[in-house]
Length: 265
Image (cartoon, rainbow, N blue to C red; front, top):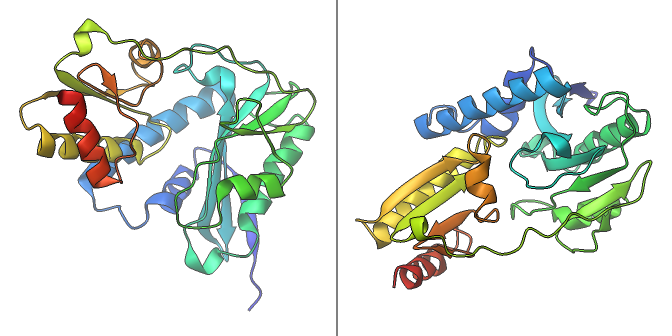
């Protein structure tokens, strides 16, 4: 049987296919469903304002992988943005039968070609460069190595990778470090984004872990795309506990809980 890969730009008619790629095993989870609802709203807003902000890979007519991206200027959660820059939020292929077939590379190269021909969600404007968030899920080939293999270069700041298209890389101004705010005392503030359907479920998991350590502490969960200024004034910290930023990833459960205990004092 011939194995066929097809790539489609996101549209209103295939949003469900994009959602299926990441959420096929969690469609019955009510908390994940809320994350999906928020993601769909975000996608519809992006489509209306900027056009396609994702590509979907179909393998033998089944949606198996995706790449998500958007103009940096569209990111209202950032205090500073650059013109004519595309942010690659993620590339993800969780489908076992479609792995090790170069599908992630095909998605990335499709976006790069669009950028070179001015056919992206930037409109008919030049794309100066692409910037990638090369985080690892721990599941597959390390994302930093994937991007480097495809020509991306570490940024001078060292936190992301970029690929020049029609311009040179330009740095963003520093946003500084979180300074304790009086209103953050004696409570926990969890930030999540609606550009990923896992944002809200992860926030709820973090809430549960905090309650296991400090059952009586007040907890506030904030969607940073709905209240960007709340995130910006806290210097984009994803979790504040008792006016202290938490750095340990929540999936490192015991270490995370210990940092929460120390923050509460």
